[in-house]
Amino acid sequence: MKFIEIKLPAMGEGITDATITKWLVKEGDTVDIDTPIVEVATDKVDSEIPSPVEGKVAKRLLNEGDIPKVGQVLAVVEIEGEEQETDTPKEQPKEQPTSSSVEQSTTSQPVNEVTTNHIATHLKNGAFVPPLVRKIAQEEGLTQHQLESIKGSGIEGKLTKTDILSYLNSSNKVEVQLAESATPSTTLNPKAENGVEIIEMDRLRRLTANHMTLSKQTSAHVTSFIEVDMTNIVHWRERNKGKFEKQNGEKLTYTPFFFSAVVDAIKNYPILNSSVINDQIHIKKDLNLGMATALPNDNLIVPVIKNADRLNLAGLAFAVNDLARRARSFKLQPNEVQGGTFTITNLGAFDNLAGTPIINQPQVAILAVGSIKKRPVVIESPLGDTIGIRHITILSLSYDHRIIDGALGGAFLKQIATNLQTFAPSDL
Image 1 (spheres, rainbow, N blue to C red):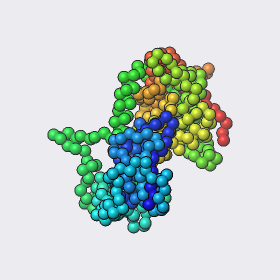
Image 2: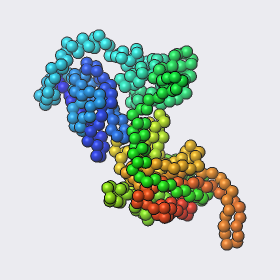
Image 3: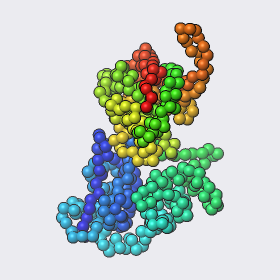
Image 4: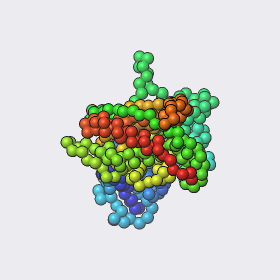
Protein backbone atom coordinates (compact mmCIF):
# COMPACT_ATOMS: atom_id res chain seq x y z
CA MET A 1 0.00 0.00 0.00
CA LYS A 2 0.99 3.61 -0.53
CA PHE A 3 0.18 6.62 1.64
CA ILE A 4 -0.64 10.11 0.34
CA GLU A 5 -0.50 13.12 2.65
CA ILE A 6 -3.30 15.71 2.47
CA LYS A 7 -1.80 19.06 3.42
CA LEU A 8 -3.33 22.45 4.14
CA PRO A 9 -2.87 24.38 0.87
CA ALA A 10 -2.04 28.06 0.52
CA MET A 11 -5.23 29.94 1.38
CA GLY A 12 -4.34 33.34 -0.03
CA GLU A 13 -1.89 36.17 0.48
CA GLY A 14 -1.07 36.76 4.13
CA ILE A 15 -2.94 33.67 5.41
CA THR A 16 -0.64 31.30 7.28
CA ASP A 17 -3.15 29.04 9.00
CA ALA A 18 -6.78 27.99 9.11
CA THR A 19 -9.20 26.45 11.60
CA ILE A 20 -10.56 22.94 11.07
CA THR A 21 -14.32 23.37 11.39
CA LYS A 22 -15.57 19.97 10.21
CA TRP A 23 -14.15 16.61 9.29
CA LEU A 24 -16.22 15.36 6.37
CA VAL A 25 -14.87 11.79 6.44
CA LYS A 26 -13.97 9.20 9.06
CA GLU A 27 -10.92 7.03 9.28
CA GLY A 28 -11.61 4.04 7.07
CA ASP A 29 -13.96 5.91 4.73
CA THR A 30 -13.49 5.37 1.01
CA VAL A 31 -12.94 8.59 -0.97
CA ASP A 32 -12.89 9.40 -4.66
CA ILE A 33 -10.81 12.03 -6.39
CA ASP A 34 -12.11 15.49 -5.42
CA THR A 35 -14.16 14.14 -2.51
CA PRO A 36 -14.07 16.83 0.21
CA ILE A 37 -12.01 15.59 3.15
CA VAL A 38 -12.22 18.44 5.62
CA GLU A 39 -13.77 21.90 5.91
CA VAL A 40 -11.47 24.69 7.08
CA ALA A 41 -12.09 28.36 7.77
CA THR A 42 -10.05 31.54 7.69
CA ASP A 43 -11.19 34.95 8.92
CA LYS A 44 -12.98 35.51 5.61
CA VAL A 45 -14.17 32.31 3.93
CA ASP A 46 -14.83 28.62 4.49
CA SER A 47 -13.18 26.13 2.14
CA GLU A 48 -13.27 22.40 1.53
CA ILE A 49 -10.01 20.48 1.08
CA PRO A 50 -10.57 17.68 -1.47
CA SER A 51 -8.76 14.38 -1.83
CA PRO A 52 -6.38 14.36 -4.82
CA VAL A 53 -6.60 10.55 -5.06
CA GLU A 54 -8.98 7.62 -4.73
CA GLY A 55 -8.44 5.48 -1.65
CA LYS A 56 -9.23 5.05 2.02
CA VAL A 57 -8.71 7.54 4.84
CA ALA A 58 -5.97 5.92 6.90
CA LYS A 59 -5.56 8.63 9.51
CA ARG A 60 -6.90 12.03 10.53
CA LEU A 61 -4.00 13.82 12.20
CA LEU A 62 -5.86 16.79 13.71
CA ASN A 63 -9.13 17.46 15.50
CA GLU A 64 -11.95 19.92 14.82
CA GLY A 65 -10.97 23.26 16.29
CA ASP A 66 -7.23 22.74 15.67
CA ILE A 67 -5.40 25.46 13.72
CA PRO A 68 -2.89 23.94 11.29
CA LYS A 69 -0.31 25.96 9.38
CA VAL A 70 -0.14 26.08 5.60
CA GLY A 71 1.68 22.95 4.45
CA GLN A 72 0.88 20.96 7.58
CA VAL A 73 -0.44 17.42 7.04
CA LEU A 74 -4.15 17.10 7.83
CA ALA A 75 -4.82 13.50 6.90
CA VAL A 76 -3.33 10.46 5.21
CA VAL A 77 -5.06 8.52 2.44
CA GLU A 78 -4.12 4.94 1.67
CA ILE A 79 -4.12 4.00 -2.02
CA GLU A 80 -3.31 0.94 -4.09
CA GLY A 81 0.30 0.65 -5.20
CA GLU A 82 3.76 -0.24 -4.03
CA GLU A 83 4.86 1.35 -0.79
CA GLN A 84 7.21 4.30 -1.18
CA GLU A 85 9.06 5.69 1.76
CA THR A 86 8.67 9.29 0.60
CA ASP A 87 4.89 8.95 0.61
CA THR A 88 4.65 7.35 4.05
CA PRO A 89 3.73 9.62 6.95
CA LYS A 90 6.74 10.66 9.00
CA GLU A 91 5.05 9.67 12.22
CA GLN A 92 2.83 6.61 12.17
CA PRO A 93 0.48 6.92 15.16
CA LYS A 94 -0.03 3.70 17.08
CA GLU A 95 -3.75 3.78 16.51
CA GLN A 96 -3.35 3.96 12.72
CA PRO A 97 -5.81 1.43 11.31
CA THR A 98 -4.53 -1.78 9.77
CA SER A 99 -6.10 -3.18 6.64
CA SER A 100 -8.20 -5.54 8.74
CA SER A 101 -9.47 -2.76 11.00
CA VAL A 102 -10.32 -0.64 7.95
CA GLU A 103 -12.22 -3.59 6.48
CA GLN A 104 -14.06 -4.03 9.75
CA SER A 105 -14.96 -0.33 9.83
CA THR A 106 -16.28 -0.27 6.28
CA THR A 107 -18.13 -3.53 6.79
CA SER A 108 -19.91 -2.42 9.93
CA GLN A 109 -20.76 0.97 8.44
CA PRO A 110 -21.32 0.82 4.64
CA VAL A 111 -19.97 3.78 2.68
CA ASN A 112 -23.36 4.19 1.03
CA GLU A 113 -25.00 5.06 4.32
CA VAL A 114 -22.30 6.44 6.61
CA THR A 115 -24.00 8.78 9.12
CA THR A 116 -26.27 10.08 6.39
CA ASN A 117 -29.74 8.94 7.44
CA HIS A 118 -29.87 6.52 4.47
CA ILE A 119 -28.77 9.15 1.96
CA ALA A 120 -27.09 7.33 -0.92
CA THR A 121 -23.69 8.28 -2.29
CA HIS A 122 -25.17 8.52 -5.78
CA LEU A 123 -28.47 9.79 -7.14
CA LYS A 124 -30.61 7.70 -9.45
CA ASN A 125 -29.05 9.45 -12.44
CA GLY A 126 -25.59 8.40 -11.24
CA ALA A 127 -24.55 11.85 -9.97
CA PHE A 128 -22.22 11.74 -6.96
CA VAL A 129 -23.39 13.04 -3.56
CA PRO A 130 -20.28 14.12 -1.58
CA PRO A 131 -20.02 13.42 2.18
CA LEU A 132 -20.51 17.09 3.10
CA VAL A 133 -23.76 17.24 1.11
CA ARG A 134 -24.96 14.00 2.71
CA LYS A 135 -24.10 15.37 6.15
CA ILE A 136 -26.02 18.61 5.52
CA ALA A 137 -28.95 16.60 4.20
CA GLN A 138 -28.99 14.52 7.37
CA GLU A 139 -28.74 17.55 9.65
CA GLU A 140 -31.54 19.31 7.79
CA GLY A 141 -33.78 16.24 7.76
CA LEU A 142 -33.89 15.92 3.97
CA THR A 143 -35.00 12.70 2.34
CA GLN A 144 -33.45 10.88 -0.59
CA HIS A 145 -36.48 11.94 -2.63
CA GLN A 146 -35.77 15.60 -1.92
CA LEU A 147 -32.12 15.24 -2.93
CA GLU A 148 -33.22 13.69 -6.22
CA SER A 149 -35.10 16.92 -6.99
CA ILE A 150 -31.95 19.07 -6.71
CA LYS A 151 -30.02 19.75 -9.92
CA GLY A 152 -26.28 19.32 -9.32
CA SER A 153 -23.94 21.98 -10.69
CA GLY A 154 -20.75 19.96 -10.27
CA ILE A 155 -18.92 17.77 -12.75
CA GLU A 156 -21.27 15.14 -14.25
CA GLY A 157 -24.14 16.56 -12.23
CA LYS A 158 -22.44 16.14 -8.83
CA LEU A 159 -24.31 17.81 -5.99
CA THR A 160 -22.27 20.53 -4.32
CA LYS A 161 -22.53 22.36 -1.03
CA THR A 162 -23.81 25.39 -2.94
CA ASP A 163 -26.57 23.34 -4.56
CA ILE A 164 -27.98 22.06 -1.28
CA LEU A 165 -27.65 25.42 0.50
CA SER A 166 -29.48 27.13 -2.36
CA TYR A 167 -32.18 24.48 -2.16
CA LEU A 168 -32.54 24.96 1.59
CA ASN A 169 -33.00 28.69 1.04
CA SER A 170 -35.63 28.21 -1.66
CA SER A 171 -39.38 27.76 -1.45
CA ASN A 172 -39.06 24.38 -3.17
CA LYS A 173 -37.99 22.78 0.08
CA VAL A 174 -41.10 23.97 1.90
CA GLU A 175 -43.35 22.82 -0.93
CA VAL A 176 -41.82 19.34 -1.01
CA GLN A 177 -42.04 19.02 2.77
CA LEU A 178 -45.72 19.96 2.68
CA ALA A 179 -46.35 17.50 -0.12
CA GLU A 180 -44.68 14.71 1.83
CA SER A 181 -46.20 15.82 5.16
CA ALA A 182 -42.71 15.70 6.59
CA THR A 183 -41.97 17.02 10.06
CA PRO A 184 -39.72 20.13 9.84
CA SER A 185 -36.18 19.53 10.98
CA THR A 186 -35.31 20.87 14.41
CA THR A 187 -32.13 22.26 12.85
CA LEU A 188 -34.19 24.57 10.69
CA ASN A 189 -36.38 25.74 13.54
CA PRO A 190 -35.02 28.09 16.22
CA LYS A 191 -35.13 26.96 19.82
CA ALA A 192 -38.01 28.25 21.89
CA GLU A 193 -37.72 29.06 25.59
CA ASN A 194 -40.50 30.78 27.52
CA GLY A 195 -42.07 32.07 24.33
CA VAL A 196 -38.77 33.47 23.01
CA GLU A 197 -37.14 32.22 19.82
CA ILE A 198 -33.42 31.59 20.23
CA ILE A 199 -31.34 31.40 17.05
CA GLU A 200 -27.65 30.55 17.26
CA MET A 201 -25.41 32.77 15.15
CA ASP A 202 -23.41 30.89 12.54
CA ARG A 203 -19.68 31.41 12.29
CA LEU A 204 -19.78 34.09 9.58
CA ARG A 205 -22.45 36.06 11.44
CA ARG A 206 -20.32 35.98 14.61
CA LEU A 207 -17.29 37.23 12.66
CA THR A 208 -19.36 40.02 11.12
CA ALA A 209 -20.76 41.02 14.51
CA ASN A 210 -17.30 41.19 16.06
CA HIS A 211 -15.89 43.11 13.09
CA MET A 212 -18.67 45.71 13.16
CA THR A 213 -18.40 46.16 16.94
CA LEU A 214 -14.63 46.56 16.66
CA SER A 215 -15.08 49.19 13.95
CA LYS A 216 -17.41 51.32 16.10
CA GLN A 217 -14.99 51.02 19.01
CA THR A 218 -12.00 51.94 16.81
CA SER A 219 -13.15 54.78 14.54
CA ALA A 220 -14.98 57.99 15.31
CA HIS A 221 -17.79 57.61 12.79
CA VAL A 222 -19.30 60.58 10.98
CA THR A 223 -21.74 60.27 8.07
CA SER A 224 -22.42 62.88 5.38
CA PHE A 225 -25.15 62.76 2.70
CA ILE A 226 -25.53 64.21 -0.77
CA GLU A 227 -28.16 63.99 -3.51
CA VAL A 228 -26.97 63.11 -6.99
CA ASP A 229 -28.76 63.67 -10.29
CA MET A 230 -28.26 60.38 -12.17
CA THR A 231 -30.42 61.32 -15.17
CA ASN A 232 -27.59 61.47 -17.71
CA ILE A 233 -26.28 58.06 -16.64
CA VAL A 234 -29.77 56.50 -16.57
CA HIS A 235 -30.48 57.67 -20.13
CA TRP A 236 -27.02 56.66 -21.42
CA ARG A 237 -27.33 53.20 -19.90
CA GLU A 238 -30.79 52.67 -21.40
CA ARG A 239 -29.48 53.58 -24.84
CA ASN A 240 -26.36 51.45 -24.63
CA LYS A 241 -26.96 48.48 -22.30
CA GLY A 242 -27.95 46.11 -25.12
CA LYS A 243 -24.93 46.94 -27.25
CA PHE A 244 -22.68 46.87 -24.16
CA GLU A 245 -23.77 43.31 -23.35
CA LYS A 246 -23.16 42.15 -26.92
CA GLN A 247 -19.69 43.72 -27.01
CA ASN A 248 -18.53 42.70 -23.54
CA GLY A 249 -20.60 39.66 -22.62
CA GLU A 250 -21.74 41.26 -19.38
CA LYS A 251 -24.84 43.12 -18.28
CA LEU A 252 -24.30 46.77 -17.42
CA THR A 253 -25.73 47.68 -14.02
CA TYR A 254 -25.37 51.04 -12.27
CA THR A 255 -22.72 49.71 -9.87
CA PRO A 256 -19.71 50.18 -12.20
CA PHE A 257 -20.61 53.85 -12.63
CA PHE A 258 -20.37 54.40 -8.88
CA PHE A 259 -17.10 52.48 -8.70
CA SER A 260 -15.63 54.56 -11.51
CA ALA A 261 -16.72 57.80 -9.82
CA VAL A 262 -15.13 56.72 -6.53
CA VAL A 263 -11.87 55.76 -8.25
CA ASP A 264 -11.58 59.22 -9.85
CA ALA A 265 -12.45 60.94 -6.57
CA ILE A 266 -9.82 59.02 -4.60
CA LYS A 267 -7.18 60.17 -7.09
CA ASN A 268 -7.95 63.73 -5.92
CA TYR A 269 -8.31 62.79 -2.24
CA PRO A 270 -5.86 59.90 -1.64
CA ILE A 271 -6.16 60.09 2.15
CA LEU A 272 -9.56 58.42 1.78
CA ASN A 273 -7.59 55.36 0.62
CA SER A 274 -5.66 54.92 3.84
CA SER A 275 -5.48 53.24 7.24
CA VAL A 276 -4.67 54.54 10.71
CA ILE A 277 -1.92 52.56 12.43
CA ASN A 278 -1.06 53.83 15.89
CA ASP A 279 -0.38 57.54 15.34
CA GLN A 280 0.44 57.18 11.66
CA ILE A 281 -1.64 57.53 8.50
CA HIS A 282 -0.73 54.92 5.89
CA ILE A 283 -1.94 56.02 2.44
CA LYS A 284 -2.25 53.03 0.12
CA LYS A 285 -0.83 53.16 -3.38
CA ASP A 286 -3.06 50.29 -4.52
CA LEU A 287 -6.73 51.12 -4.95
CA ASN A 288 -8.71 47.99 -4.09
CA LEU A 289 -12.46 48.51 -3.93
CA GLY A 290 -14.54 46.24 -1.70
CA MET A 291 -18.17 45.61 -2.65
CA ALA A 292 -20.44 44.55 0.19
CA THR A 293 -22.49 41.59 -1.05
CA ALA A 294 -25.49 39.95 0.57
CA LEU A 295 -25.39 36.14 0.57
CA PRO A 296 -28.32 33.73 0.15
CA ASN A 297 -27.96 32.70 3.81
CA ASP A 298 -28.52 36.33 4.93
CA ASN A 299 -24.85 36.86 5.76
CA LEU A 300 -22.59 39.52 4.26
CA ILE A 301 -19.23 39.26 2.52
CA VAL A 302 -17.01 41.88 0.89
CA PRO A 303 -15.15 40.65 -2.21
CA VAL A 304 -12.47 43.02 -3.48
CA ILE A 305 -11.75 44.40 -6.95
CA LYS A 306 -7.96 44.70 -6.96
CA ASN A 307 -6.36 47.71 -8.71
CA ALA A 308 -9.73 49.13 -9.66
CA ASP A 309 -8.06 52.29 -10.94
CA ARG A 310 -6.62 50.29 -13.86
CA LEU A 311 -10.04 49.19 -15.12
CA ASN A 312 -12.35 50.97 -17.53
CA LEU A 313 -16.15 50.80 -17.28
CA ALA A 314 -16.28 47.43 -19.06
CA GLY A 315 -13.56 46.01 -16.82
CA LEU A 316 -15.36 47.20 -13.71
CA ALA A 317 -18.65 45.72 -14.98
CA PHE A 318 -17.02 42.33 -15.51
CA ALA A 319 -15.29 42.39 -12.10
CA VAL A 320 -18.47 43.45 -10.28
CA ASN A 321 -20.65 40.81 -11.94
CA ASP A 322 -18.09 38.04 -11.61
CA LEU A 323 -17.39 38.61 -7.92
CA ALA A 324 -21.09 39.00 -7.11
CA ARG A 325 -21.97 35.73 -8.87
CA ARG A 326 -19.25 33.74 -7.17
CA ALA A 327 -19.90 35.32 -3.78
CA ARG A 328 -23.56 34.29 -3.90
CA SER A 329 -22.62 30.75 -4.95
CA PHE A 330 -19.94 30.53 -2.19
CA LYS A 331 -17.11 30.12 -4.70
CA LEU A 332 -14.83 33.00 -3.73
CA GLN A 333 -11.17 32.33 -3.04
CA PRO A 334 -9.66 33.57 0.26
CA ASN A 335 -7.46 36.17 -1.47
CA GLU A 336 -10.54 37.68 -3.13
CA VAL A 337 -11.88 38.99 0.17
CA GLN A 338 -8.61 40.53 1.35
CA GLY A 339 -6.71 43.73 0.79
CA GLY A 340 -9.60 46.15 0.34
CA THR A 341 -8.75 49.84 0.77
CA PHE A 342 -12.22 51.40 0.32
CA THR A 343 -15.68 49.82 0.42
CA ILE A 344 -18.95 50.52 -1.39
CA THR A 345 -22.30 49.10 -0.29
CA ASN A 346 -25.42 49.25 -2.45
CA LEU A 347 -28.52 49.92 -0.35
CA GLY A 348 -30.52 50.59 -3.50
CA ALA A 349 -30.65 46.87 -4.22
CA PHE A 350 -33.22 46.70 -1.41
CA ASP A 351 -34.99 49.91 -2.50
CA ASN A 352 -33.52 51.80 0.49
CA LEU A 353 -33.05 55.55 0.09
CA ALA A 354 -30.00 55.99 2.33
CA GLY A 355 -28.16 54.58 5.33
CA THR A 356 -25.24 55.09 7.70
CA PRO A 357 -22.78 52.28 6.92
CA ILE A 358 -20.11 51.11 9.36
CA ILE A 359 -16.49 51.48 8.22
CA ASN A 360 -14.80 48.24 7.15
CA GLN A 361 -11.64 48.23 9.24
CA PRO A 362 -8.81 49.01 8.77
CA GLN A 363 -10.18 51.35 6.10
CA VAL A 364 -11.16 54.94 6.89
CA ALA A 365 -14.34 55.37 4.83
CA ILE A 366 -17.26 53.54 3.24
CA LEU A 367 -19.81 54.76 0.67
CA ALA A 368 -23.46 53.68 0.67
CA VAL A 369 -25.51 54.08 -2.52
CA GLY A 370 -29.26 54.52 -2.25
CA SER A 371 -31.92 53.58 -4.78
CA ILE A 372 -32.39 55.73 -7.89
CA LYS A 373 -35.83 57.37 -7.85
CA LYS A 374 -37.69 59.75 -10.16
CA ARG A 375 -38.41 63.00 -8.36
CA PRO A 376 -39.66 66.50 -9.21
CA VAL A 377 -36.73 68.86 -8.69
CA VAL A 378 -35.87 72.48 -9.32
CA ILE A 379 -33.66 72.85 -12.40
CA GLU A 380 -31.62 76.04 -12.41
CA SER A 381 -30.60 77.70 -15.66
CA PRO A 382 -29.56 81.19 -16.86
CA LEU A 383 -33.09 81.57 -18.21
CA GLY A 384 -34.71 80.86 -14.86
CA ASP A 385 -35.76 77.98 -12.67
CA THR A 386 -38.05 75.19 -13.82
CA ILE A 387 -39.49 72.02 -12.33
CA GLY A 388 -38.47 68.77 -13.98
CA ILE A 389 -38.53 65.02 -13.40
CA ARG A 390 -35.02 63.75 -12.66
CA HIS A 391 -33.46 60.46 -11.54
CA ILE A 392 -32.08 61.12 -8.06
CA THR A 393 -30.05 58.99 -5.68
CA ILE A 394 -28.64 59.68 -2.21
CA LEU A 395 -25.04 58.88 -1.40
CA SER A 396 -23.93 58.56 2.22
CA LEU A 397 -20.28 58.52 3.24
CA SER A 398 -19.20 57.30 6.68
CA TYR A 399 -15.64 58.31 7.49
CA ASP A 400 -13.14 58.17 10.33
CA HIS A 401 -13.21 61.55 12.08
CA ARG A 402 -9.84 60.84 13.67
CA ILE A 403 -8.15 61.84 10.41
CA ILE A 404 -10.97 63.05 8.12
CA ASP A 405 -12.78 66.21 9.14
CA GLY A 406 -16.21 67.20 7.87
CA ALA A 407 -14.79 69.59 5.26
CA LEU A 408 -12.60 66.90 3.72
CA GLY A 409 -15.28 64.21 3.90
CA GLY A 410 -17.83 66.57 2.38
CA ALA A 411 -15.49 67.64 -0.40
CA PHE A 412 -14.74 64.03 -1.28
CA LEU A 413 -18.43 63.16 -1.36
CA LYS A 414 -19.17 66.18 -3.54
CA GLN A 415 -16.42 65.10 -5.94
CA ILE A 416 -18.08 61.69 -6.33
CA ALA A 417 -21.40 63.41 -7.05
CA THR A 418 -19.77 65.72 -9.60
CA ASN A 419 -18.11 62.78 -11.35
CA LEU A 420 -21.49 61.07 -11.69
CA GLN A 421 -23.42 64.16 -12.79
CA THR A 422 -20.86 65.12 -15.45
CA PHE A 423 -20.71 61.65 -16.96
CA ALA A 424 -21.19 62.25 -20.69
CA PRO A 425 -19.35 59.79 -22.95
CA SER A 426 -20.39 59.23 -26.55
CA ASP A 427 -22.72 56.34 -27.27
CA LEU A 428 -21.24 52.91 -27.99
